[in-house]
Image 1 (tube, rainbow, N blue to C red):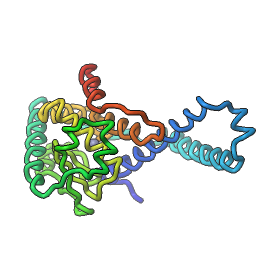
Image 2: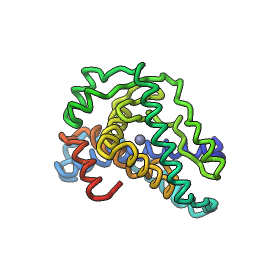
Image 3: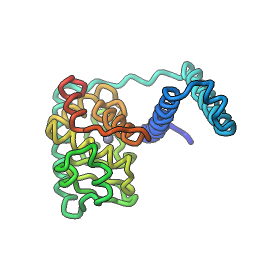
Image 4: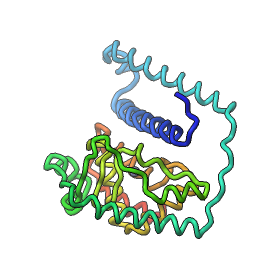
Length: 257
Ligand SMILES: [Zn+2]
């Protein structure tokens, strides 16, 4: 594979991030194991083949990431990118907020509610009201086309996020899935729905644009970091009941968005 376009770099970072989330889940599982049992107990009573395969996997992963880290010093630093002006940022917020609203209204008539199964699985983490009013649409690979204003952003010399590579896009209470609904993608999207409900659509757009302009990667926008972290927490095997809305209110109060 040749990573020479910004789209390919976005795709690569999306896969890199996905692998990192899986590693975090593994890390969390091992941490629980360490809390419950001593190394001695695991060595004496743990199944030998399972211990050996786990050690092999962990050391192969360590080798792989160490090789990447040691090679990264030879890479050229990325070319410097221009800073957007406050007017350009305000314009982008305007575009994003109206795009989210328009897409919500456009898709709403063909969406359906969450299945009773999804509702019961998600009930320990989201309010009844949010789950009741959420509407979803599956595009089965048809994929959302990028918003028209992306062309203007490119013309100004900036690179917008690659939305066709995302699992889903949240337009308030309407969620559009590029493929089909998976539990991880649904949870992630519902975190955004709750963020929009709590922060308001305009403030959400403002925070998204401001953070993206600073970091230039979708995965480092705090609104995204929170959605990724909470969906990993939800999928971890030892997860407890937690309220997404409470977590969002906490991040909002602490100014973490
Ligand atoms: Zn997201």
